[in-house]
Length: 254
Image (spheres, rainbow, N blue to C red):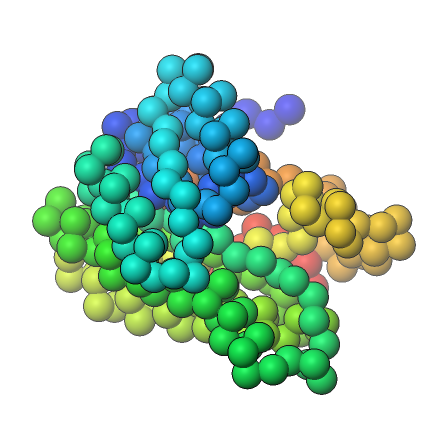
């Protein structure tokens, strides 16, 4: 079993995670809670959100959530404000929420394209806009945007998704420049194929796994916990001089 680090600088920090009820997001929520952070997360899944918060609070953590559809920007802003009232303005933001639904380029309509951008990119921009003033007032902060290795690999079968994820990297670097004078660091974590329940239910097959192992330098499959550990590092004081960059968690996938 791996032995993971503890980051004293994260204890008591107010953390905001989007899409925190399941998958990578839930592991990120768990990881920050274990560090003693105050964690608020946003999700549309009532049952999953309630179960996660109840479990972690039962263990002595400070975890809460607000239900909202992140495609509704005004609702998202309201949910962020509600969590700030409960836990204090976030000095760590993890823009995690996304959906990698498969689709063919031939069938994409303008409405579907807009919906994919709203699901996978737009809310990230406005979450940063919502939390940045509080970070500036606090004297600094850390923002972690979730990218994807899919477009780095020239993956096909979901072009609207990969378009949105590629744009995340440009957004990260621009915000890192604009917010850097306020000691706010902005980075992108780039997961490879992470073995979440969703991936296992929808796309993991014996043939797909065998093909993917051939592309990875490390042959172990990647669990969500490893993405969460990279997020913790980037949010901590240990990464004080890390900004405007990509941090890969993809086992050397080529």
